[in-house]
Length: 128
Image (cartoon, rainbow, N blue to C red; front, side, top):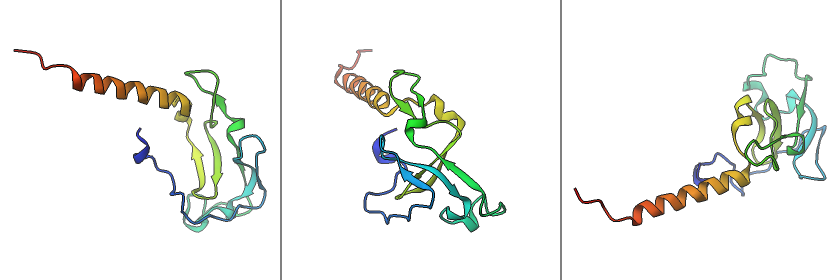
């Protein structure tokens, strides 16, 4: 997936307040901890709206993640876990994220695919 199609918040997006119970990890700088459902942005219209607002919701950083299946070196966010970002808010990592390589492996694969595309463009057309 190319960077321009990624669903990430803009760098100048309004920062959301950090929910009580979350703190930055000293290693990866992502948020981790336990927050209450009521602290979710748009809680009243979320899928959790019928749950008890004080229900705890665990947030994990990438340090709690699993190793990339491709390189077995870098970590990816743990499948079936939650994350928090002050620009985008709450996010859930579905089970199939275990199949997605880490950022470095994705970048390497994208670079290889770009090289292959360029090579195909520069090849002379075959005569019929």
